[in-house]
Amino acid sequence: MQEALTALLLGDSGVAALCNNRVHWRLQPALQKDFPCLSLSLISEPRGYTLDGEAWIREARVQVDAWATNYGGAVIVARAVTAALSGYRGEVSGIEIHGLFADGSRDMDGEIADRRVFGVSSDYLVKWSDAEG
Image: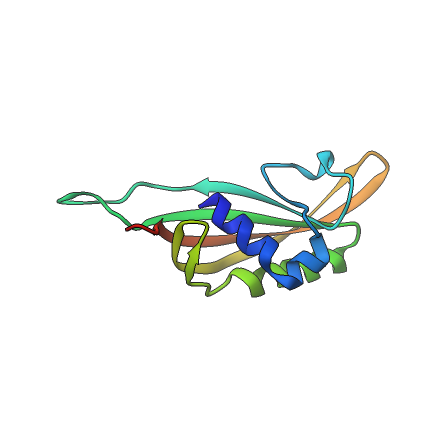
């Protein structure tokens, strides 16, 4: 699922124009030199079960943090991410995305060395399965 979300974001012209290839899992902004950028984190991925065993559709909560050197830039990147992900359905990188839904956001800020950075952190619910079913 992580590879599929990365491919969706890097394949979107709006996100790519803003972030180039700076889409990383678990990379905190203090380790990033160029902005804007995205940092993704898997927040939860509980296992679902039926009486027949493990459910074939899984659900994950993913946090996408959009970072920029000013607040307006972070908002623009976060909006591009929402446009790329929210409501998406389809197959990407061998993963079937049954539904991808925006589920709230919050503002962030911080300091890296002598540079202030700003962020918008958004949660997405991802319903997915292996494409083979």
